[in-house]
Length: 390
Image: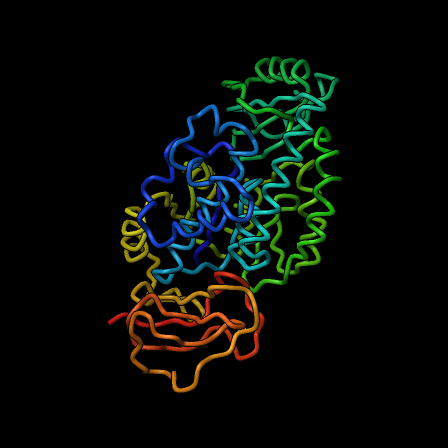
């Protein structure tokens, strides 16, 4: 059983978009630029590390690049049984599962980043990673500081992040070392994320989340707040709001997926940090996908070992030799007459309409079936049909 995981802020890298410029999935970058009125391509290709550290740039570029990698994976027929994302990555996971459209996700992430940046200026804070200390002992270290410092991320065994005022984080860091922490590392961030210091950002974001109206999904998404799977849009309205000032329970989320039967964890997006966490937390296989070349490695990886696409990805899950046709817009889907199982499809063939927009196949192959049904309201990038390549 396969899970898609999506990284959060801090995974961005200078030049991370360059390998994708000539790939078909790069069109998402142009769409994001139009949505937010910013040159996202320049940020992905030309921005230096300092510019990308800005919360407003880090969140937007990580979100867009992760969905670009996902889009490339969808084009070769990849699918998952669960999605999860670390902090910002939770928004990516919701877009991947269809709870949010790409446009809704881009707008929400931009608003979230602006709100968190403003909250950091209003109430300055910082974060530090505590390594080599049990979770409960890290909580003790925060309590001993007797000041504004809290656990912000439960990342993996022996890896916990604390956050709060600079003085309080410094005090808690000292107590953590006294309790046996192997190392405490200050993190280059502009605020105390996932703590009460983000309350003003939470209040600002609540209205934007409500306006987006997250939808129900077929693929469950694991929440950072409670480490449980959710597939109801109404639940996500409150979960996303609570996430800003609650700790990210990532280790617990990984264990939940393992308990649900997940055996393979695929990290989609820049960095590779989550892959390391999954290795330390679960018994499953892990791989990180960040470039077009990594997609070939992924298909090889899925075809070896105990889990193969041919034996495990059944029903709505697609074989690697098959291709997905995705929706070019949001609206009501209508199939065309004459396209049935076994029909030969050429590149450029019209297989349906979403509103007034044609659904055009980017692939040649033998038509297998529609995934969307007649008159279904679909979102941008939602899978419409699948083909078996010739």
